[in-house]
Amino acid sequence: MSRILVVEDEPIIRSELRRLLVRSGHEVAEAATVAEAAEVGPLNYDLVITDLRLPGAQGTDLIGMALGTPVIIMTSFATVKSAVEAMKLGAVDYVSKPFDPDELLITVDRVIREARMARQNAALRSDVERTFNVDGIVGASEAMRRIMDRVERVAPTDATVLVLGESGTGKELIARAIHARSRRKDAPFVAVNCAAIPEGLIESELFGHEKGAFTGASRHHEGLVESAHGGTLFLDEVGELPPSAQARLLRVLQESEVRQVGSNKTRKVDVRVIAATHRDLPELVRAGAFREDLYFRLRVLDIRLPPLRERPEDLPQLADHLLAKACHKVGRSGLSLSPEALAAMAAHPWPGNVREMENAIERAVILADDLVIDVELLGLERLQTEHVHLDEAPTDGEDGEETTTLDLSLEDYFRQFVLQHQHELSETDLAKRLGISRKALWERRQKLGIPRR
Image (cartoon, rainbow, N blue to C red):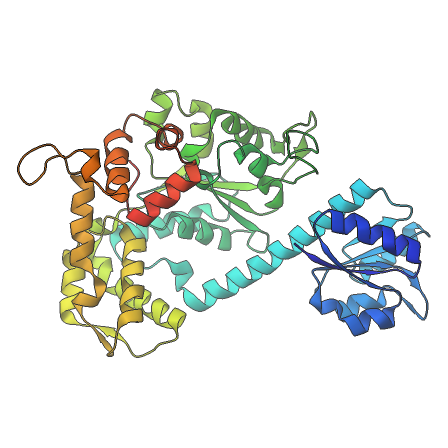
């Protein structure tokens, strides 16, 4: 729910605006003059909608008071000159009275969404600059040097990139590094986990929908592809896209245009696409689960990330980096890893790759009583035991008899079922067999550390 300040001296118009916005789920405050609005405080709201001509002062005076809060100017004196002047002063949009309710709501939703995304991107850039070193990509091994060379070469272009690698290897970091080095670096970076969105909603979320396109579509909705206009769209787990969404994505790549669900019109978009997956896309193509033409469109250039176990020379540097990051996150300093802890980390297989190491180190930082982190705090023996258990799902009991599902906990049953069937079933079919959503399946995989094959 967004908070909106309406500044209008006509009580009837002000009341009509309030009812319209409240019905759309917004929280609304009112003011009749600039002075009243200043007392309320425009900085406390997500959006200000103000009439241009108000008693005592112009509505455009609120733009300077808002200090970054978006302002929509509204007036019955609709002239090109006044519109240009309002936009020059910093208004984000201009609405003529009498206004169309649907068009006004579309404008309000767009302005709030764009402002929220701008704040999120600014906060993310600040957090990345403060927390990460060289975009968070750490490693001096030959494999990592080759990867960074590819990043530097492809970043200035608009070529589509396919990032491949196991879960937890840092595919999104590579995508962000490409974006940060491109001409689009000041435009939005929109990241989408295709596996975390229910199949029935993914087309609407990615490409948008028109009002009335389906049950529950009460208003026009701009998709994430259009939200990334001018910037970069990162599609993580692109191998999970259903066929209909694959066709729409292919059109975006081929024609630079998007067609919303329920619409027969197309809109031009300027978006660079970076996709990522841990799955074998050529195998999916052979199985008929992924479009061959889309695969080749995505794979203009591919970057393969090696698992952590294949670049052991990077482990000490990466451990130090993740330790500094965890200390910053929890507000501690001066911690170090003991030689025994480093030796145990070097011997650990890290099936969850960098993400697993990051979680283990953060856990140790939280639990540490002293400045030196011992191996026990990392919990590597427990983690390794669990991952051995994952790779070799239990089938026999201690007496040699087959273990039945009645002997298993819910987590063990989930683990065993997924490991036994993930090779022949898609994520959608697995979720249906388990009676859960695709998003719930993905979240349970993350929680239990079950890699997707």
